[in-house]
Length: 362
Image 1 (cartoon, rainbow, N blue to C red):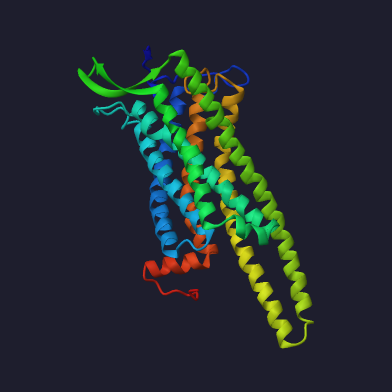
Image 2: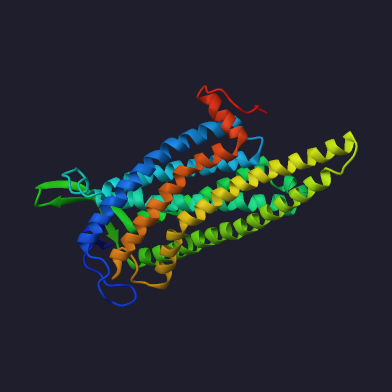
């Protein structure tokens, strides 16, 4: 077995534009961009760790009588793991830390313990978001049947299957990369690094996995969320128009029984609408923040030279850093959506921190 040792971040030099062949970004420019993006990403990642720990505690406190809480808990767990891996990965490639005389090579170890694994966790986040959006669409289309289909048991099974099929294939990272001790003459020291396995079988297996789990899987998840979000937005608009028309009709209803019955229907509609609005907001943020990932996956599928070791590696690194920053932002802001749109979440959070609740706890 031939091991071809490489150092990913040291491979960078002047590259050509994807379309014209002219220089697009220099090493010096990439250095300062990398420094700025890594700093921002670490700030949002730290915030993501804190906010998702809070989210997990709140959803556990709320319980799992509602399947939506189970899905949102899984989303918070995925975001937490993603932000931890992102925080470690960006620290390893940050200029200064990566150049320090550590007992390991940060830029190489990050590929195996940070950057490589975080991409698989992000795919888990994508599919959990897709499932949440799709579940809400079913609740709108077939409200009577969906309660029989989507039970706590089936939701658990689906979420476990998503985690296995998205995070499980991360083992592929270790097919192509191995830990390896390296002697550095300049430091007169042996440090832990990584080596790339270039045997035909491993390269073929890595290629197949990249096509299935690195391109097709995340792109399908992205467009599933996109389609479901469009449907939910259309539903919200129609629901808003319906409620306005019912409010006008309600003023003409005579008798307490009819008025009470109408008020009950209107309250149920508002409760459903609030949940749909919350999920739509989560999906919208996901779409915006996951777009750089989707563009990166599409470019990798279309342009073979668009990779870490290809001709356009500088552009690849730049788009990858932007996507990592966007994902860290997405993972850290959901708490604000939950707090502003979820009454039960807000009550549980206020009680957890011993604040006086302004809403009635149900």
